[in-house]
Image 1: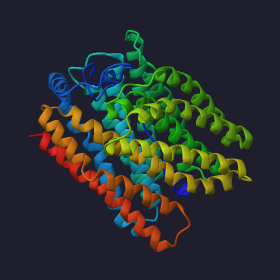
Image 2: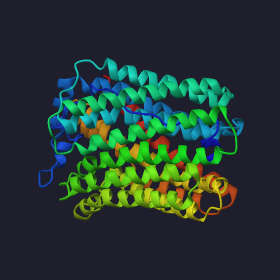
Image 3: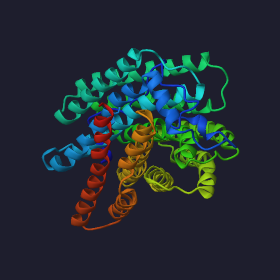
Image 4: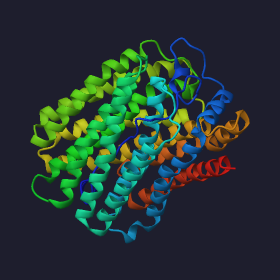
Length: 447
């Protein structure tokens, strides 16, 4: 799978728009409800009113279809993969480049507006344009990787790079114009994540057209910078405010300070890791990864404190909690793999064992858990529809979380092929159990 990851296509893309989503002072999908020492999140009635007043509901109804479409394509791929030689590479990029990057593009803009308390735009043409450019690039990369058209993939990577760069400029401009805000550090995480992706995209594009002795090092750089930089930094920055909101609890004392301390640790660790794998300075790479793990622990510690007071009680919370556990486990496995490898080729081959827990255990569970919480809130319509949508997306929550994580545990263990096939089908079933109600939520919200 790592060969596929570094194989026919580039990196994993980015956020968008200096004219972001909506201010969320009274929005339970935003950070203001997670104020330390404050009250529980605002009512769904306030959420509905905000959505109606800003036109947010229609926007999120349209753009939410993007990550869902890529997830649906993953399900289809699960059944047709015997006929597609590059299916593993395609699966990785459908999830990361397609589903996750579209979600980050939309929701980082939403949370940026929320934490900076800036007004929602009357029109979202710039954000829509960036989403359009991103997805044209994603589709070009996917076609290039499966049809062996490397220069088409390079063009797609250039479009992805352009969308991310424009988003980065937009976020920076928005941050510069905003008044000081308590949760500004969240936007700093988004900026760092976008910079990481801008470093990873050219390396992915380079691997499309060049295959030489440096390839294992480029694969390791591409995978780590995109997964830990683009995805993980975005998640850590968002969980600062999203996690207490999901649990309907007060934010832990010192949470903002912890996030502020963790960010430079994570960025420094990621830089050392990137340089270490490119030069194959194994000790430097491992030290960088250890520093990144420390940063994750610092950032997640307040979340643990909140969960001790009010444990997760529904699917979104359970899913985010399980994802955090898989993240730390996979990072520990990754550090052991790097430290024990006798060369970059060995490390790249062994990264296969780390990739699955990161992709399925961490990335996919964060995406599905976050969307299960956020979508009902931002689509508006009043308390009744919000409750119905939430109930629909939370249906069979314990079974879905237990099945997905048990299947993943079995899958990563040395098991016979037929057991691995069965468990992979179970993971696909759990994914369908999210996609079907999510599609119903979007269709019914349109009426």
